[in-house]
Length: 439
Image 1: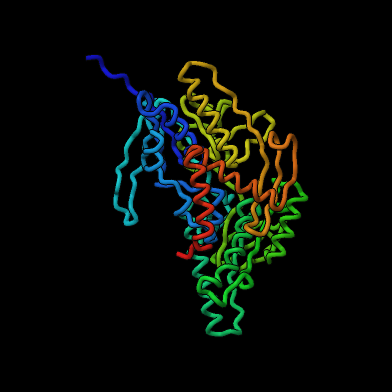
Image 2: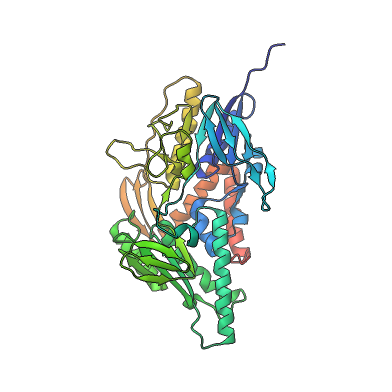
């Protein structure tokens, strides 16, 4: 009896926007007859990272929007393994996963290896603290759902303390102080969302608490907020934030974080109950230990076909990858749209490579940037193929386009039928569900 031919095994590490879209396409294309498509992630579910500021503020219930990998893989014909990538053996063509532990530090799944014929790293990014002392110990990040959930819990606890203090002593000037370091998309969107959430708390048991009891300060080392947007839109967003009550301080560099206190370069201190670090992203430090060439920011350097410069059997996409279209050009920015485009290119290149045909060059299309200031406003710019140039957008049009980006993400990871169904369900949930998640 002839020996069965071994299946071609494609392993994708990381179930973020790019990785999840890629395994869906691979599973839909190949199924399980001649290929074995495997997704590896240390978590059990996916939440779109641009939504984490809403999860942190309590405006979004992540349980309604998360995607469980086990259910998703059953639908699209790939396999899912829970685990954290520990090392790569390029000679044996295997990856090693660290043990999976429960909350009591008991082992659930032991360390094990998975073979691959082709490997795709889509691990995403982490916040870059730039080595500032005390940040890791005293500041909060918004890199994952777990971190966003922790922020929400701490925020609600502080709101409850202030509310209780005001009930016991109506004359007390009790406040919740939040300091956000970094005025990019995450910092600005979080600041606006906090005021939206604070304004709704009085309807959910905190009758004496509202947005007037919230003090939010944004600290930006650069000369203006939202540097990726045109200056006019940056100025418009700043005016909107100031009108909400946010204190925006540009040209302020944080040099140290202490417990409930930030220290700036000129020696000024900013006291805060909650401190969020959103000053930029980098690759996870362990990426530089995998034997692949990385940048100073621990991102994996890839070629124009998104293969690593070290090994053509290994691809990298999304925030963990560094690709410069030209030698003197800056790397592609770490955005969700870049991860989506990279996933599409790698999907095509994996097929071409298996067929022995030349691979496609990755060409990044910058479709612009949109920033949501919660229900108050949306600003941004559209570029590239969308408008044939560059166009600033604000208000309802910008809000509609911003919402459409998430809908496109749902279609990319679920397909048209289920994606459209989830969009409809999402609209219904916004009507029938509470406006805030308070647990």
